[in-house]
Structures are given as structure tokens and as C-alpha cells.
Image 1 (cartoon, rainbow over the protein chains, first blue to last red):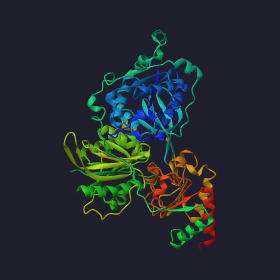
Image 2 (cartoon, helix red, strand yellow):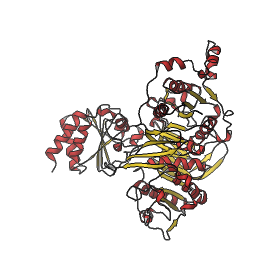
Image 3 (tube, chains in turn green, purple):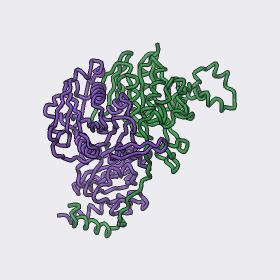
Image 4 (cartoon, rainbow over the protein chains, first blue to last red):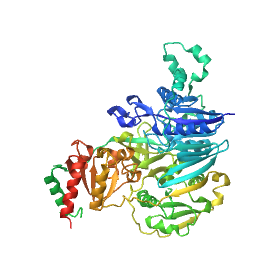
Length: 290
Length: 340
């Protein structure tokens, strides 16, 4: 039985480049309007998985991502860096899921990949910063969780020892397997793409992506089954639809407001010595400083 | 109606964490708005008398789970106690600090109870909600308010149908306030053996190094804060110089922390610390809403920025258009010559 490591990864809108049409009227994110990237901490998670794979015999890494069709891009990216296979969990019925509904769907996909030894994810995604899906998935799987992992200390077939990064220090913990781990941004950065792996996986596609290809890859894929990126729908993971999407999400967005600044009567000064002296004089005179 | 619950984090020194006392103070207000009680949960070891650090902030009931295996914090036993306790007590609202512990624990609990949880709220209020499609009105929901998505928007999140309504809040966001003591406060000792079993202790802590808090910017009267516009770690030395002269603390925006200019403990904003100083000098900070959420209650704000259009200028009392490395030395020079 291989030592199976499942890495949860999310394709996220690059929140550093947010445009006007980034939000839809219902308060959910309009992903189509934004550049999409590999969630940064999920790359740290992949690196941790690769380090485990380096140390354990017969280890394999399966990337699981939930999202729209184009999220297959990050599964390929993970393959170029050392992941062995991938599953894209995708269905319109997932749209609008909050962290609880998301973790429900992800946990079902992970269960379908059982038996597994480790589930590793980034601590949080930059589009929400909630850090909730990791612990919630662990709970739904009924396995322990180790959050904020910074370093792999040791691992074997039965247990793993992890150094965690906390607000004011570190903690080293040992957990039996299987366990869910979330990885902190202070963990080692992910190794770059490997040229041989890029060659090997560059034609990896989901079924949906294949339909858009002009060339026929049927034969190639028959010889190289690792080029199939699995695509799982709600039915494939046998999810109850009332636990998904907006209806399966206990949190609702009541309203979204654009930020209106309460404008103050701002005095504008130059950096001149004269202006600076007057300002400092006033601050001292009014006892704001000094 | 059921009560508001606050999970009280226990510090290394065995005290109730400040963020928990802040949440108790806020929880009391919410409970008053709803006409219900406030209950606290403290889980740890050697907790005799811990209620003395909880009751002054408005709690009516303190649940105490005291067992030597419950400190230091590990997720599974703390989650097991809360899940069972919440199933028994059915809280209306449950609040957690958005700390290493709270952000690990609250989602685990929310998942087990299948209820909604909102992270890093910057404001909590009580209000109604009408579901237009169903024509259904919900009274007295918890509005969980937080900046979202790159910070251009403020989202109000509600949990109409599930209880408890759960939220995490960063340290410093809520104000610590003393309340008149409850007339008949109750301390409920939890029988730990009924709530946890051996299987909850499979994760073992084998080493810990927790440092005392070195940097305390939360209570500083004057803060000199730098953003990405400061440009480098070396340029931040100017901010330390000014802070030294003024007896101030140095803070930073997330962009400056991410760029490696300063340590994370100095981060001010939604995912950092919230401050309310007399004077806030923002150097090279553009002023994204997440940052402003952590400092807009400063009594006076001075912005030093090369960009006249920087959003922070709109909430500043004084805007100095110029380079940080020109302005700060002039401020230092005048202050040295003219202060007593």
C-alpha cells in the first residue's frame, strides 16, 4: 500500500490586483474577472508533502483542488513540481459555498481517496484569509489536526513530528497518522518546476479540457494514464446537494458596502523645514507629544 | 433565549488572555442588547480563582474545565469540551479570540456543530434581517462585520438559521471594559472525564518555546508606523529614531511586514493589532481598509506620503506631501531643540 499524501490546493484570485467588477451582486466573488494564481501557502504545503515523500518509501502525492474548470492549471503546476496525480472537484452546485460547505465537499473527495496517511493544506487562502477549511476538513474526516506547520521534523509510516509556528514561539508536536496539517507561510518555499516533470505532465488534462483540445490525444493518454486529471462532480463524491453551495452554507452575506471614507478636514503640508517646524510646534503646544 | 458564550484563552502565566477579556466586555454589550446572559468557558489547569479575572467583565456564569492534560492547549480535548457544552447549553452566540488558539479551535467546533463562523471580525452588532425571496424576517441576528476581498469592501455576514452564531475577533479590536458584577455569579466546574476521552490526547506536545510578549504597541500613546512606501528595512531605522525621540512605538502595515521590513508583532490592521493612540504617524502607508480598520480610532493622524491621492490622507488630520527620509529628520531636529 503506498503512503498517500493528499495536498489540498486552491486557485485564488490575485487579491493584489482587484478591479471594480470583482464582486457579484449576491456578494460572492466574480472569479472570472481576476487573474488566478496558486494560493501561496498551498505551495508551502506542497513543499512539505514533497519533503515527506523524500523520506518515506512508496509515497505518492495527490493534489485535490475544488473550483472551476480552469483550476486544473494549479494541478498541472503541482505536477511540474513533484505531485503524482490530481483531482479537480468541480460542479456548478458548489458555487457560493462557505467554508463549512467547502470542507464538507473536500472531505468527501478525500474519503474517496482513502486509505490516506496525510492531508496537507496551506493555513489560509489569500482571498478569504479565514484559515477555517483546514480544521473543518479535519473535523469532518474525524482525524486530528496540526495547524501552522513550519518544519517537518520526522515522519514514518505510523507518526509524524512537526514544528509549529505560534504567535509568540514554537511548539513541536507528534501525531499518529492519518492527520491533517495546515502549513504556515514561514515554512520552506516550494521547490521550482522540474524540467523533466514539465515534459512528462505538460499534456495532463481534465476531461473537460480535453474536449477543448483541437488535437486528438486519445492514444497518448491510453499509453500514459498519469496524464488524466480526474474530474469529480457532486455525484462522483456522493454529496448531498442541500449541504452544498448557498443552501448548504450557514453564513450568508447580508450586505456588501464599498468603503466610504469619513473625510476629515486634512491640512496639507509640504516637507519644508518651515512647515515641519510649525507642525511640531503645534503638536508640542497641544501636548499631543512631549 | 440562550446566552452569549466567550471562550477564555489561558496564557502561559495562567491568566485569562486580554483578548478574551475584551470579548467578554463586548459579549456583555451584545447580551444586554438581547436581554440575555453572558457565560465564559475557561479550559486549562490550575484554574482555581480564574473567575476573578472573568466576572469583572460582565459574565454571569463561568464554566471551568480544570485538568492537567488541558494545558498547554491541544485542539481535540478543548474542541470536545466545547462541542458537548454547546450542545447542552445551546448558546445564541459564541466568540473566540482570533489567535493561534482561537483560529485553530473555532473552526473545528463550528464544523462539528455545523454552524457558521466568521473570521477576524472588526465589528459585531445586533440587527434584523429580511429574506426577500422567502419573505421571512429574522430578529436580533449577530451582524459579523469584516473587510473582505482585497479590502475594497466591508461585508456584513449573518447566520440566520444555525446556532451558535460564531465569530473570531483579533486582539485590541474590542475595548476592555469593567461591568458591575453580576448579582449571583455561578462557577460551574465541568466534570472533565464526562467530556473527553483518551482518544482526544493522541497529539503530543514534545517541545515548546513560548516567549513573553516583547513588543507592546497596543497601549502606546504615540505610534510611528511604516508601510511599503518606506522602501527598505534600513529606511525603517528612521522610524525607530523618531519613535525613540518621541517615546513612541513603531508599527507597520501588512505590506511592510510581508516585505520583511519589520517583525510581524508590529503589524497594525485587521489581521494584526488594533490601536487607539493619541497620535498616529503613518509613513509611506497608502491606507488600505484592512490597515485603517486597525488605526482609524487614533485621536490624531499624520500621513507622510509622496502620493497626494493616498487613501490614508482622507482620514489624516495632517498630510505631509514628501519623502519619509526628508520629513522625519526635520521632525526629530525640531523636537530635540524645542522639547523640555
